[in-house]
Length: 71
Length: 252
Image (tube, chains in turn blue, purple):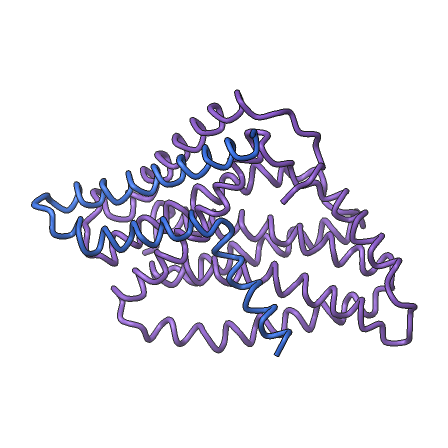
């Protein structure tokens, strides 16, 4: 069973490297599904909010990692 | 009829991602073949390819049977996790925060590890397993990318052809030069693939949630442009503060 756990870890590693970053993405998708979808905007605006959140998560995670390495 | 504007991003993503993964797998298989012999290296490679083919045969039809919106959302979330992980790492590498991957160094490290492993036998299990694992691990990423960018948009055949073309190219060039393909701009390719996969991910999550993107499929190009702009800005920002890193240092 050890090899199965190792294989599962390898597969999970394809999607998760920084747990905080992965959780942030999942939380943002959940927020888009349950909150953004209910906002009184048209579809292009909902899509734009979804994208803006993804971009913000990416930039924040990169800057956080760079700060951590620097110091 | 399938237009290039419709299929182009899927073909490009599958081709570029497969190029990167095939180069990485080739480095390890070459190290196994050079150090421990070509018989276990090729046997491990063929076994790995057969295992991947079984996975595709097992999971391909399952994906096709899922309701379209559920599949778009599931594929979109996985692509976002996968693509943004790639892009994040590529940004950190481009900004000098983590070291660039160096195929020549990876080849030297793998060769050294294989030399110090158990003595050679007629059927070299270590060599076989090393080649098998390299092909399966790198191939899994290719299979996922092809299924993800292909299945959700009904572009499985063009995406598969893009991936096959990349793998064939790497095998032909690898057989010709018999060296790791260190001159391929792997980190630049990873940056580009990260941008494309993240764009696909955001697009399919939006579609899965029922949001309508302006321009339908063509929105993927616009989303990719925004990911590229944000990534480039992040590289500039972290380059200013990152301590200089030697090439081939502690690449993650």
